[in-house]
Length: 232
Image (tube, rainbow, N blue to C red; front, side, top):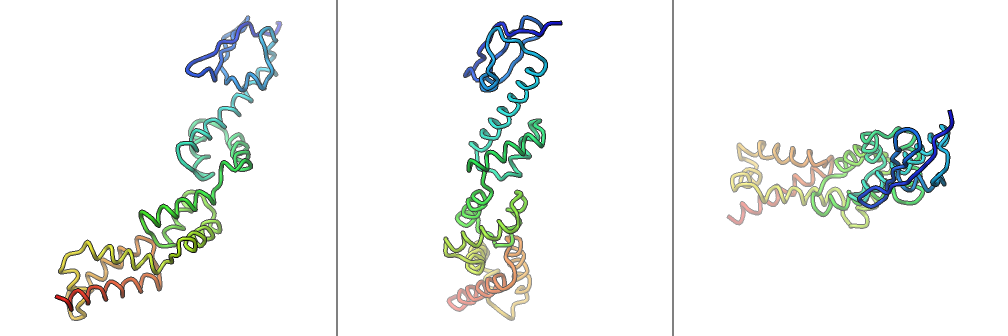
């Protein structure tokens, strides 16, 4: 049986970036315009089984790249996040890996840049301790070394450290508490002091503060409360 030939090329809406190839035999074939152009096909050309398979491979490569770029245009993502989204769209692992590798080579996919942006956002809007930030970055697929290095660099740029962030978090927590909590924290003889301290400790720990930074923030909150008590 002879090979089918391309008889007509129909541009598809909305932007003509996909086309429908009408063949002299068999069902029409819908592909991206870019894949059609890359295959150097034209009206009247034969579409052998090998040519059809190659055309579909080109089309899949174009589609995975366009899907990746569309996701990145919405917001910056790590390689792991982007790979997961593309897998859910039905693309295979090898095709995804090749696509993401090309995006990294072009500077369009950069885990370190995503990590830095996330850390800066947290510092400005939702301060967290270094341990919590590392955990969050790791959950997005960023390597431990990259996460730690990025946090250290951003902290230096912003002139902050874990201790300062912990004190800020403790002050913010204290500002939301009742006078009774202030009284308890500021009075070593208060029966409710341990309860207030446990609440503050839990709050700071959940936000990723550890060790000396957490202890210093607890002391800071107690000094503030003692000052409030002395002034009352």
